[in-house]
Image (cartoon, rainbow over all chains, first blue to last red; front, side, top):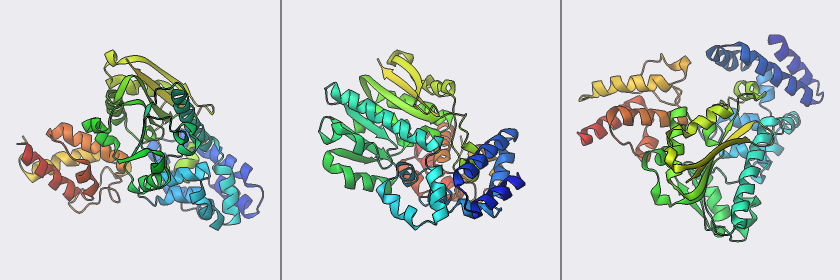
Length: 306
Length: 87
């Protein structure tokens, strides 16, 4: 692996197109990761790679740098996703980066994992639009809403076709941005965590026709995930549905995300994700299914309440 | 029934070690041990710890209280207080 890191460094210093170098590095890291026990991989990633001269070069990519730096104290914050969505509020950060960093970013934020993040968001948008088009002014709850980047794409929100749209997150900075941009459109901003829903059921938030958590399950343990889903189903109106999304295990950029970006997710197969419904009272379930977004890197579990 | 801070600390040590990253699971948990910086407990793992604490002690820990906990000593203090209230 040492020679791979050396070769990648040389290629990036020679200013050849970065795509091939970064992709090769990502694929090799992924393969290497598969050969090691988890803790050995973690040790290698946090020591060997990060002590190599290549590491600061890779962190010239503002997306990777934000992920590794964790400015809000936790991984995968809403601003990190803004690099994936190419949001205006990270544009200056991208423009301040070195030319090489911008070229690396040009590749990394279009890799399959970020593409899947955009794709899962698009699915949620489609679903909300479909429900709104059906009339009935649906009540929507976004759990761990981040910066609510689906909002700009929602014609139904602009047109006032939603009964309620509640944005829940535990990060006050994220909520401040959502409030600034979307409160005037009727989005209700609420501070709260997955833990709060698990423990109290957050019936105070009301009942909903669609509850979705796009990024949360990538960080939750099985136990927390099962309890959260059971609590979320209890917050649904009859016929309402919950979506929880999760990255799957076959993602080839996993090694790069963990070793370079210090971005460690909980990966679940489609079958494993389906098991998150284990704590839901079967009598409360009208139907259950799993499906993928178009990149096939994120699985979504849908539970419809009876 | 767990009655002393020492009992609570011992039970909490077991819970925190269960959810700490494996490379930090052997860390000595002192009152001043920072749960995030020293023990590697991030916010998702804190959810697991709180659920573990609630199951183990039969208490409820409020979100606001959890947000204020930074060190192992503060966690012990919080759980001890809540346990006293529950008894």
